[in-house]
Figure (cartoon, helix red, strand yellow):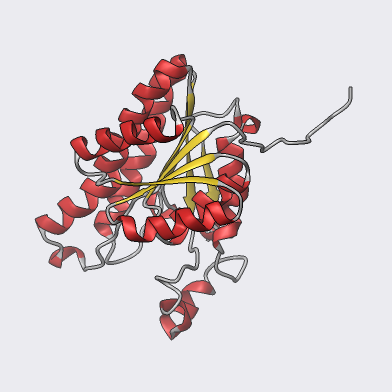
Length: 256
């Protein structure tokens, strides 16, 4: 039996939506999917940075469309999904990436802090996945990729609401996978460890940040491109028999 892996991760002809795409990991996810042939819709609350990203993708020969979306608002989510379908066609891939964190000791965390984090990180993923899945069901299936975190199973201080939201997303990921499989929709998650981005790079240069890096078995921070393989596996047909899975990309952090 011959093995031909040519074009294994080719996404030509597919439409992908990435939420929280204005910067950091979301922008990287969008560029990676576009480089693999997908037409990519990039979504966030503010469109200005999205337009810059979409232009970079187009300049590299890809197809991109920017759309405003507030993941906590059902009407905004529905309008954005309709906008993407009108511009690019029905969705094949959703990357549920939008997320925030509030860093405070547990005893100082307010109900407003809790609502803000859970609304974005958990309810937001629910709303976008539900809207995308309804569309995917009508078009024959697709792949939903939820971006969770190693802090969905591990905990560190001053991030109680973030840890709770990511733990909840892991269970939501499994529940969606169970229910949506019958429609040809795969639902999986990527759980990144500490990935260096412009937002956090300053912290990791400090003494506390360096101490944290030394707790990672590989003794280094992850880079955004360390997530490319997991992303393309779950987005492409190479992950066709995967659903309800969590791909952990953390340099061994959870082994400590």
